[in-house]
Length: 377
Image 1 (cartoon, rainbow, N blue to C red):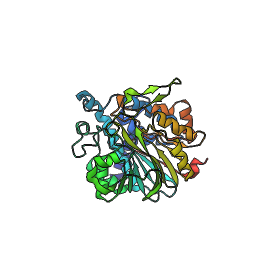
Image 2: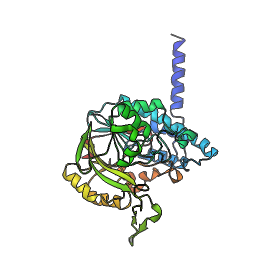
Image 3: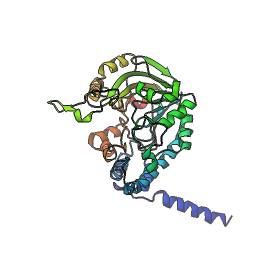
Image 4: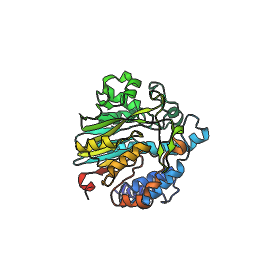
C-alpha cells in the first residue's frame, strides 16, 4: 500500500498539471485550442472564453486547402488536422454513448456537417469528412486533397458513424456538403440518403438507397419528416449583380445542367423540432416556406438560409419569428482563406444572442442539446 499511494498521487498530480496546461488567449496553438474546447464546452456561460477559442482558430486557419497547397502549408496544417481528428474521435464517442429523452442533441463535425440525434433515431445533414475537391463525379478515385493532407476520416471512423446514422440529408452535390464514402456505407447498410437528381446520377452505382424527394409534399423517412423545395446554387459568381440598394443577385447559368448545383431546401422535423437547411440556394423560397409553415413545418432552428435573393426571401418570411440559430459552413477550408470565420458570432449583438440562448456556434467535435422548453423561454 505504501508503494501504491505515492504512485497514485504522482499520477494525479501529472494529470492535473497537464489538464490546464494552456493560457486562454486569442492566439492559442492547436493543442491549446483543443484543451480550451474541453475546458469551456458550448454554454451560454462560456461566451467570453469561447470567443478567444474562435479568434485563435481564425488566426490558425488562414489559407485554402486545395490541390496546389504547398509543402510548407501541409506542414502548417498538420497540427490543425490532428486537432480536428482528435475532436472527431471525441464526438463519435459522445454520440455512441448519448441517450436523448427530449428534443435533440446536435453533433458538429466539419464545416456544414451536422449529426442530429433524437430518441427516435439519428440523421446526418450535409456530412463531409474534411476538405476535398468538388469531386462528386469521380467517387471511386482517391481525392487528391485528402490524400495530400491526411485531413479526412479513417475507414473505421466512417464505419462507426454509418452504424449510428439512420437517414442522411444532402442539400447539393458539392464536396463540402456531400460525402460519397459515408453514402456508400449507408447504402451497404440499406439506409436512405436524400439527394438531388444531379447527385443521384453522379452516384448511380449506389442505386435505390439514394432518394430524390417529392418536392412540395411532406414525407417520412425513419426518424425524420421532411418538406422540401428544389432550389439551385447559381455558380457563375462573376456574373452576380447589385441593385441600387446594394443587394447582390445571383443569376442562373446558361447551362444549368453543368454549372448550377441543384439544391434540396429542407424543412426537417426530428425530435419534435423543425430544422431549416437551405445550403447555398439562390432561388426565392418565401412562398414555399409559407406553405410549409401552414403544413406545420414552422422552423425552430435555422442553419443556412441560402444565398443572395434566396437568403433574403427566407429571412423576410421568418421576420419577427423567434428562431434558434445554429451556424454552419465555417472553416470550409477549400474556400478562400480557409473559409468563413467564427469569431464574428461572438461580437456585439451576436454575442448577446448567444448569451440569451438564441444561438450556439459549435466548433469541431462538439455537441449541444436543445429541447422545446429551451426554445420557448
